[in-house]
Length: 220
Length: 320
Image (cartoon, rainbow over all chains, first blue to last red; front, top):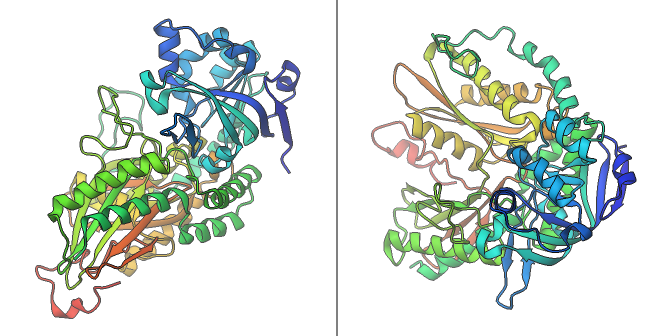
């Protein structure tokens, strides 16, 4: 059985330090969404963070909710699913420094180098969503929308949504404060068998870039 | 006569059903895959996904927030009577897409590729895609919607006749391994393989094979059916399960569709549907009745015909 952990937000340093790779995590409190649209706006265009964000939440969810603005101005949240995080690598150091964020939730994790050089030194860890399509399960965990920022400027998918959540999960711990990665460990195990899969298959008539790293190689 | 209004309403309904309700064939398929899974993490992921399907249906909430790029496949019977002409159907489908995006809600994923501008309704230039086919001796219109993501898990390669089945295996392994790592292609999934045609039809055939055939369905050519089974085993022996964790749950089913191709080549495409394989179909009859199902029944014998004419001998088998 995988270990199960519940964390109240904002997460304190002790709870984060205690997280083990592969543990199953549920969250209670406030999380916010931010992806390239928000990063661009704040880090490159110099807009300020929403006031008080850092005091209520230190969890950045890489997510675009399936949401709609109703006629009375309230919000309907349907499914909630993470988007692939590796694309946001270049923003994260500055973002963690500015926002004080300690937990990143997303899809697929980030390169081990980012964990060792960016997240772990700042006391931050990465949790991955499960599946990755647990939209209904996570949607149920969202109790309400505290606020939405830059909806007009960025649209529903890229806006910053601030969610109040309860039993929000499950997530799996992908990185810890030692900068280790569950995905990398599992990938190493899988890689051991890959060469065997190709044994006995004849060489293709035409090679292509990607099978070789040397761009000067001839393909035939 | 099939009214424009009923086309719009039925299309809106299938948009909802596709987003929320897991097709029964896929649910049975994933449970079967899960029963053979020994990897603890991969097994946990699939167990959680099955719980997620149940909650989606209970709460009438999309299974996955990335409701993909909603699109349509329309099959029109020769005897179908409908108002508004073909552009009337297109208008109804665009209207249903916008309405369902707001009401379900679906994520308004569609943006202009360069300006990243959006209409917040999944409608835009060349969106939603509508593919048309026709069917003899019938008076109905089948409308299928598929909600599939599109960033990972799809690839194309020009193989050559001499590459043979080894070449097919090699490219399938390349694709599943590269997109399976970290679970980027959201496996275990139904995998579609397109073989032949030109580059564009090869892509189209593979995508349709993944999205428009149900778990357990086999290609009518017995040798292709055999190859489908062989490739399922190959995929599930990679050693990789859900999210790229150690395991065996990679391929829930694999479908191959072929098209006659250039004598010098054997183009191949690979497409992975996802853990929430989302499809729903409505059949609108000319008497006004509407039926809903999850099997698109897209590849009819007429659709796969290889003769110049569609003769009396094969006609009898046409209707599913």
